[in-house]
Length: 225
Image (cartoon, rainbow, N blue to C red; front, side):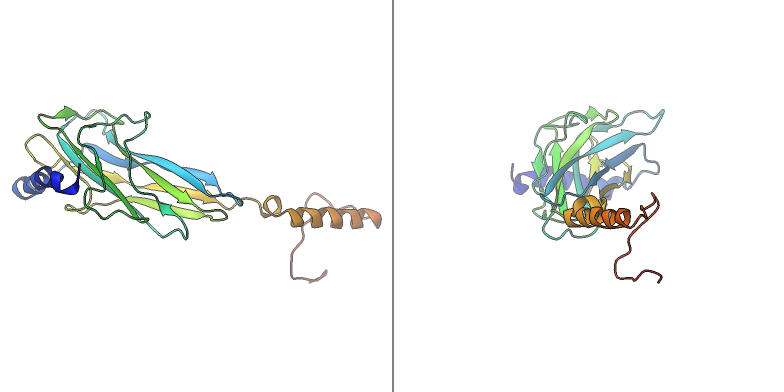
């Protein structure tokens, strides 16, 4: 399925936006998964996250006939970032629509953006709570740490749109995701620091002054400063 073959259903989504406008209430959330990991000092990591739909409590599930969804990375990851193409969601969030699934529907995906679209050939299907839209991969190079926001792109043309069987837009709210790559403990990540710590402890014991459990070493200072 090429971007050109998606022209008709995507134009239908746009036509629905123009004719029907946006509905006042949002019974649906578009959610990007979040995860916290420890950085790896030796090798890159690839993190997979689902993007899915949640239903507000006590709301009647709207019917979905087509969607396009896009996620952007808040800041660049040197040597890494989003890894095209997007894929069908994992079994944790079964795909709401499998037919005509097309990653990068607008031809814009790169290390800062991933997207996908899908549509039914006919009819519509009720949205189940937790139903998946796509899965994205984030490449985290070795030694990289930081907190990165994975935001739902709300652009009505090239971003995220849900539509019912009449082409009318289904209102939704966005829940952005976060990838937290924790710094870790430097003493454990740097072997020579651990060895130096053992050496200092040995010197202290030699002079009869064992280091207490609250002792610390501050680099670049002299004792007494």
